[in-house]
Each structure stands twice: as structure tokens, then as C-alpha cells.
Length: 292
Image 1 (cartoon, rainbow, N blue to C red):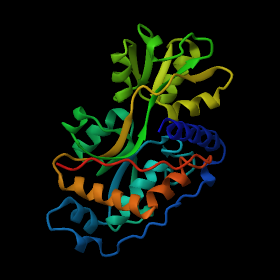
Image 2: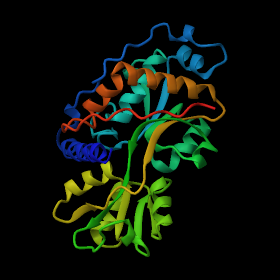
Image 3: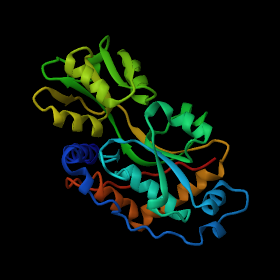
């Protein structure tokens, strides 16, 4: 599992370097998911699935700053990445083509508010499943597993998570990464974006940045002479899909749809076209949680 996860992290690093140059040339539809033209008839009256299918419109929240997961380059019409491909698979099951999806840029701190207020119908934004979040919103999955690491300036003396006790550590506000680092004794600070946090590490104002290793290695690759990723993953992040808690029927729909993609090979195709572009081995899909 560790070897496979590290391969995923290296894949994301390569993707970030590519995204800085020719992200606009990436394949926009790597998974040829068949759109159900009769989707509305497949759902029971009164369900949120039927409402969305009948409207022909869906709003999906994704990250715009995470190449390989959710990234939107300047000049592009739509974001790309593994999260984005999974969202397209769900939309197709609702009878909605990829080009008709309304993508909404979503940062870590507004994922729950966006779902609670109806700003988006779903969130696919490196959204770790936690018990606390499930008290506020619905979360289905996981459809992807990753792990948290540390980004530091070379020569910092920080080599593992044991070394961050009493140190200033940053991540994005609203992420589980901050809570995990605080539990290890770090003094945590939250920023709106990962790039703001990275800049603080480069300037020496913050000792370390922490989040999923797949994101950190990409930032290190952009500043190879100054930054490095250290330590083994010290958490397992279970990435899932967010939906409004007052629409519990969406849980089984999302779970069944993604499970079908895993069984058919579409999940693997989505991985290979995004996180797997550097040649990383495609991992086994994770087992998803049962719906209550």
C-alpha cells in the first residue's frame, strides 16, 4: 500500500509540472462515460436525483488549484483532474453531459457552507471523510485514499512528524490537515490557498506546510533547490463526495454510481488519465462505506 501511495504522490508531482506549462492541452474527456438520456425516469418521484435529472442542470464544487485532482488553467473552459472525472461520471448517471455541468470553484473552508446553502449539489474537492463533517453534511465514499506529509525548506532540521512539535505549521483553513498537525503538537495557521501557505514556508515565516503528499511534492518540484517533502505519511485521508444532509437518498445513488465505475473499469481509466499520467501503477479501488 505504501509503495502504491508513493507512486500516486510522484504522479501528482509530475502533473503539477506539466500543468504549469501545457495544462490547456490535456485530454478534457478521458473517460467516455455514456450519458443516460432517460435518466429522470430511473429515479423515484420526490428524490433529489430525479429533480436534478429533470432540470438537466447540476452544480459541482471542485478545487481549481490541485493539478491531477482538480485544476483549472488560465484560459480553460473547465477544470481537469481525478476529482473532476469522478464528478463527470456521477453527472452522466443523472443524464447530464460534461459540457453542461456548472463547475464552482470550491476551497477547503467553504465546502460545508456550499452544500448547506445549496450553492452546489455535490462537492468533489479532495474532500476527506470525517465524523465531524458527517454531522453537518452528507459524505459518500471513499473513492480515493492518500496520506498527509510535510513540506519544508531544505536544511530545516525537520525530518518527520515528530519534529513539528512546537513548530509553526500551515495548511488551508477548514482542512483536516490542520487538526492532524495540531494533534502532533504543532502551532497551526490556516490560509485560504495552498500557494499562500507555501510562500510562507519559502519566506521562512512558517516552519512547515502540511497536506496530502500528492499536493506537496508538486510544490516541491516547482522549487527543487529550496523545498523538500519529508517523513512518511502520518494519516490516511479517505477522499469522498459531499452532498446536502437533508437529501440522504443521494448517498446510495453516489455509492452505487461510483461502485459501478470501479467495477466497469471507468474508475481506473479516470485515474490513469489524471493521477496516473506519469506512469504510476493504478491502485485497487478502496472499499466504500455503507450508507446509513
